[in-house]
Length: 213
Image (cartoon, rainbow, N blue to C red):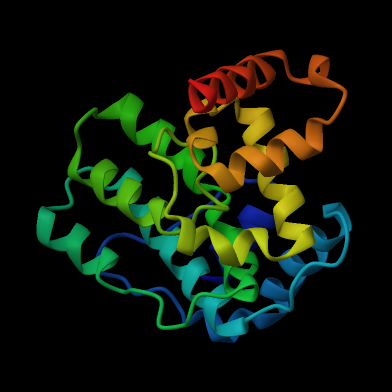
């Protein structure tokens, strides 16, 4: 795990052990997890939620396991299911959203790699399902609008709300505007400067017309 995290932190190039070889416990790499936390806070607006160490450890391990599955194309369905059966035990909260996103922000890139290598792969399906439960991290993925209840913990934090809206605008995922809360947050952010995001602004106008009609 330490080698994986160091590569991700320093260069984005990761190394994973072969299938069957367990990762070291993420709890033994808290010094590196704290570096991810510190680096993220330097880039975030406002004050980020507190780090939840347990969630960060779980998300780091999940990312490492999924990264290995992307490489080990001979992994059978039972191996894939074993990885994705390790759910997060923490309750939904802004801290959990933030802590998971330290590592799940890489999920959209992994999804693109899998889809390019093997469209329809069971790994891709399971990754989509995982990402869908973490709306802050999956903005750039082609997913349906998130559940309003699940999105509440993201938008209730001023910091995560701004980060989420910025990602919606940057990724041009206009289908997310079908969620009224997301629509309102994006509209408020763009304000009187729709030219900053033409495609999103057109989608906002279209959604408003649909509501009026």
